[in-house]
Length: 85
Image (cartoon, rainbow, N blue to C red; front, top):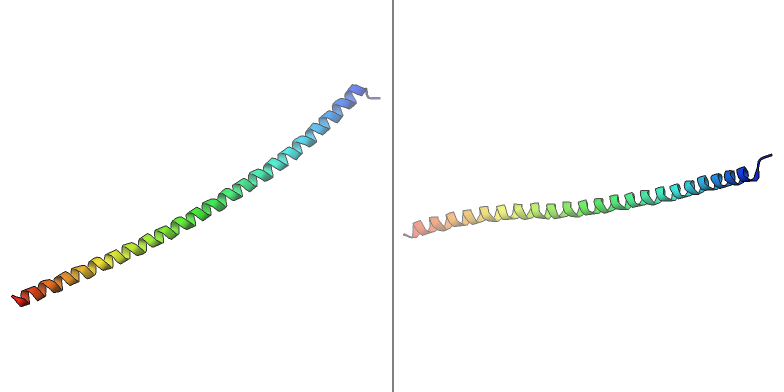
């Protein structure tokens, strides 16, 4: 039969492999959850950045329209001033 030392060594080896498998699965699940959380956070930040960009673009459009209206108004004032002379 097997000696007692070999039997203890085999039991220890099996227990070590089992513990490593459990640790590996636990670590893997935690890592995957951390990646998912990170991805969700990045998507949230990208959405917020897109909203800010849209607001900025709308502001730029309004400024361009206001500048155009000011030019038109200045031309009308100039025309009225020439007519008044």
